Structures are given as C-alpha cells and as structure tokens.
Length: 418
Ligand SMILES: Cc1cc2nc3c(=O)[nH]c(=O)nc-3n(C[C@H](O)[C@H](O)[C@H](O)COP(=O)(O)O)c2cc1C
Ligand code: SF4
Image: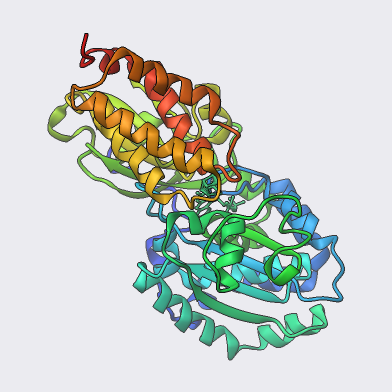
C-alpha cells in the first residue's frame, strides 16, 4: 500500500464532518439505520451480535452482551445510557474528533442503542477540557429534539426519550464506568465496588449501560448496512474499523481510521509517514500507557484485540505512542507511572501508596541514585499489586511497569549504584 492509499473511513469520512448540521447528516448516510431500527427494534441486538461489535473504550468486550443485560431489566423504570466521552488517557485523542465533528453520528447510534435496550435517558458525558466537543454535542442534541424521531421512539418506549449533555470532572479516573456514575450524580468520581453492576443498579440506582463514544458511533452504520458489511470492513478475522491515535516519534501523528486488523507497520509507515528523522523504532506504548509495550519484532502485528493480545500486549483504546532509539524507557515509564499516581482516587491504600511508591523508586533509578534493592522492590510491586484495587487503574500502571521491566531490564540495571 502506498502512502497515498485512501483510508477506510466510515466514522471519520471527510464528507461526513457536518458539525451540528442535522439536515446534512440525514441527507448523507444518517437516518437510514435509525429508520431500520424503528421498523424492527427486535432485530437491533441480533444485528449487533452478528456484526461482533466490540467495546472500543479499551476492553474489547462484546457490545451486545452488555446491551442484553440492560434490555433484560424491567422497562417499568428509567433506564440510562452513558456515552463515555471523558477521554483523558495520555495519547488517546479519537472520541473528541467524533464528538466535535460528527455529533449526529454519535447521537443516532445512542438512539438506536436506547431503542434496543428500552433505555429512555441518554447522557453524553464529556470531558470539559474538550470545549469544542461539548458545544457541538449541545447544539446537535437540540436539533434532534426538534425532529419527529423523538416522538416515534418515545412512543415505542412508552416513556419520553430525553438527552442530557453533562460535563465530567475532567479527571482521568472519571472515565472509569462506575466513577462516571458518581460524577453524573454530582459527586467526586470515586469508582464504586462491584457488584452491583451498572446494568442492574447504575445511575440513581437504575439499570445503566455505559459505552464508549467510538463504540456507539458504529451503530447507525451497522443498522444501515448490515452485519456482513461491518465484517467486511475489517482485515482477516477482525470486523469493522478502528480509530488509532498515533503519536510520538512519527512524521505525521494523528487520528487514523483503518480496518481493524491493519498491521502496526502500515499504521506507522504508510499513514504516520514513518519515523521522525529516520530514527530507529525502539518501542510502542499501546492502548494508552496503561498497557504493555510492543517492540520492533512486533511491527507485523495486526492491530485487533486478539492479535495484539497474542503478543502479550493489548489494543486498549487504540492509542499507539511510538518511541525511537535514544529515548530512555525508564524516564518515560516514570512519567506515566507518576500520571497514574496523581490520578489515583485514593480509595484503595494499595493503589495510592503503591503507585506513589513505584514512581518514587522509578525517579530514584532514573536519576542514577537507585540501588539493586530499589529495583527488586519495584519488581516485587508488579507481582503483589495487580488485582488489589477496586478498579483497573492500578492494574494498568503495573502492566506498563511489568512490561517495561520484561523488555528493557538492562536500562533499569545500567544506572544502579553498586
Ligand atoms: C481509569 C480508567 C479510565 C477510563 N477512562 C475511560 C474513558 O475516558 N472513556 C471510555 O470510554 N472508557 C474509559 N474507561 C473504560 C470504562 O470503564 C468502560 O469500560 C468503557 O467506557 C465501556 O465502553 P465500551 O464497552 O464501549 O468500551 C476507563 C477505565 C479506567 C479503569
Ligand atoms: S484502584 Fe486506585 S483509582 Fe481505582 S478505586 Fe482504587 S484507589 Fe481509586
């Protein structure tokens, strides 16, 4: 593929960036998926299941399974959908583009999801630092409120369909799904213990479905074009497309929508323009830094959830932070672990103390003042801390640390004091 090959853009198609112009969206591809959903609401979940749409907020969990949990809850009560647009992990910058430039795509997907699950309250939960996204969504929601679609869906649901655009706290931890519930209820975003799961008792104690912005953006296209079409958008066994947030030492960083399963090397070289100043690639921090590291031997890896996992890593949000030779891994990991330490909500002593302690040890080793005992303690933390926190923030920080120790132990050992 040459550098000028067209991108496989469904969600970020340049002709689809209408901002808040609902008429333009409906004349283009919009409305058809929603019409199909209104005609046959009972076919929505089977279509999403056959399309194998996965959650694109990091987990890759099948969307239809979460939807079924909420659909199975009684419809004699309010049910909530939260469209997660908190997006605060370093290196991830895809949802903001969708919210700001294609708000109707997001809203139509959310409406179809609501129809499928009996949800009547839709909350667009957006990072307040993304002011363009917040404004675009507020304006776009007002436009849908003027349409017949709202009455039609309310009639099917038997309750009024309502939209809310809510600014999150802007904190990284506020993107965790149960922390989002607390935040929308007006409290500090402390993640909740599970069970109960949000599908049974979420926002204000009601059944709640939480999906990432990119996940919901795919829904109207699947309902318009069918499950088979969606499967054909991906490479190999993978279905659909993925927006990769490419950053770091590449010539053209940016948000690239490509077939799910596109090899990493193609993303970096054909779309990212290759390495900056022709430097050699040293590592790629995947999925935001709360994951494991890929190294040059993994350049051929197809970027889909299963294939990346087979390389002891994980696709996460699809963020790819490219690092070139000459960049110190210990310094970079210190920065990221400090980010997690600062982002810890402090509820779990193991997380608050563990991430802080790890960042102190890392700083000491990076500055040349570390000892063998410091490194041994750091290694020990990666063994005892995972699984001891209420949410996955701690696990993500330890995964990164463990992976960097596995691939780059010599960089940790080299500056140690004897
Ligand atoms: C610390 C932390 C921060 C998170 N931040 C976000 C976020 O900003 N946006 C998001 O969609 N998911 C985020 N998640 C994942 C959510 O908890 C949840 O899995 C996701 O919103 C579900 O959507 P999906 O099934 O469509 O992927 C975060 C998770 C953790 C542990
Ligand atoms: S693991 Fe960390 S961020 Fe998550 S709830 Fe516990 S203290 Fe808060």
